[in-house]
Image: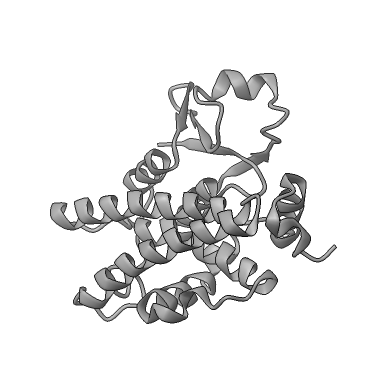
Length: 231
């Protein structure tokens, strides 16, 4: 099946990054266009039902059909079903468990955004407490899973690893700005993070100026962290 894949993203979207990691793992060619969600192009508003990224245009060249997909997990599942190698577990119960914890990971990414863009130190502390509570649950799960790591399911990369990698990458950047040793209390989570952020598919899932793009976005929002980022 001849297809052309075209992602639409912002420079810092963690959810688009999930899809890019999957595409990199599968060595699948794709195009990507970056937009500013504060100034959405007309073509994007027609393309995206929710007005958010990611969206992915799938061009079926054989049948001359274009289809637009939206929502990161839908896109990742489609990529896994159509591009080899398959990264979801084969057993239905394992797949269901992975999907459940992917949803949990989405909540973790959201909490991290709240921490990053908190208006003041008290609001940030509240978000940090929530993140710590969530990480404790992940740590407990990982400590009880019977695998040798370093990934969630064992040695092999999976969709769930791609779902958590954006959180870990952003945490590594935030630690440079405000070192708190967030993952130190969660050794299994920390080992998972270290395995992911050094993986080529993850490193190549963002623009080369990613840290600068993060800084610009934080400064533009003007919250508590804005004054901590170096100029």
